[in-house]
Length: 316
Length: 274
Image (cartoon, each protein chain N blue to C red):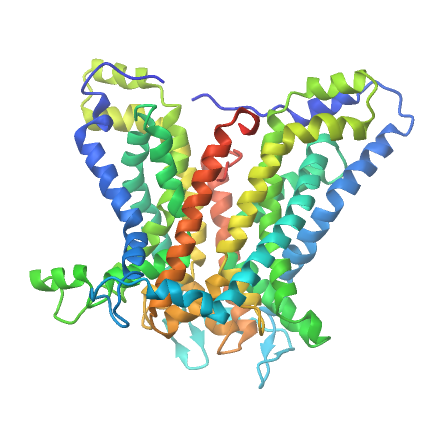
């Protein structure tokens, strides 16, 4: 696979300021310029991203006061509760929410991959005349509002919709029962939502596919599956991992789709967080949930680094 | 483009693959088509077809809460894009052309911030805003907090997009300018900036769209009177479906389609090509 190597930044700096050149305050000036240019942006991210996340972590060790305020002393109670060990003995409710969210994210990622790989390969081999239009058709849903799309699924899957009535007539659904709310609705909404995030990176990898390898595989007697497994898959794998990350991480914290399509019975991480910070007003417990989620995100990012090395991920 | 002559290798160009792609496209567009269809349905409740009407569209302009949400959304997207693009471009340029202690750490952390799920950023900001509110009401949830939240998720993306464009620039052009006696500022103003412009434009557009579409961060930091379009749609969807929501959503979808097509046409021009 040909990998694009971005021009080395140090080399550029060195060419503009040759390393052998006399100091003459050049280095100090260089550093000052860098700080002046990057300072505001870095400061912004530290103030409004770094510090709030640290505050979240700190709050997770506090206790909820009688009026929902955040109080001392420090405690690990929130984490124990999240692990299922509350005041009333073991309760699987919170661990189940975590598992359910992870399952939803994993399921969405795998479904997206299975659906997207053939489409991405098809796109990459499309006649040049149709390709821009076909690609644009993948991008348009991505630019439309997520709420609007989720809301569209609500309409399609409602008990009185054509689809539901058709399935009821077939006997696959009980009369008066819709696909929404429930698991199937959540999965449909999630896959529809995240599919472009998988198609585009896989397509980018498939564009650079060396078809000679496939020809060689076929020449050597491989069947279709073997040719795919040994000649295509290794080449598109970086695209699939990039796509998997782009799907998995947002899917983990997705709030809108499970909330609007899952109904009240299905609780996911996002809804649980919203509940703790909203109606329940138990911010320390909410902070503990958020901290665990953040840890999972960092873990996923770290795992990916291990999987395919530190590659820059092109987004959008 | 490489294409193989062997028929059994090109199975993903076959009829089966095309059929699959068509099914996937239908799947992607099903919810949008449904909304569009329902926006012309004269039934007040339910999705059963009761006849064609444009009444829901005609009702929209009279709906004050929609106008307010629309103005809020556009104001928020515009101002946050302005701030994020300025800060992000400076950050990208600084990181690409200057070395300073800590710049490598920033380069390593910047892509990570993109991956922080919106809801975590949202509740983290909500927490801080909630605490600050006890100091002074102005610091509480509302438009200012939303603006800060939006800039925070836009900034790393803008910086990364501009930096990616920066990496494709030929350093020889800047060197040539400086060899010819241009100062650092002149080089930036007359060489680097014009070359960067497509990248900055693409980043700003991305930031603008993300802000318009954002629901979670806005939802977490919203305060009284600070309703955006996504929040309005969410509230309506929760309350029960009303045909005005179909009409508004259809308008938004059409706007998104128009924007994408327009961008595509603009990008065809050689000046804007990346």
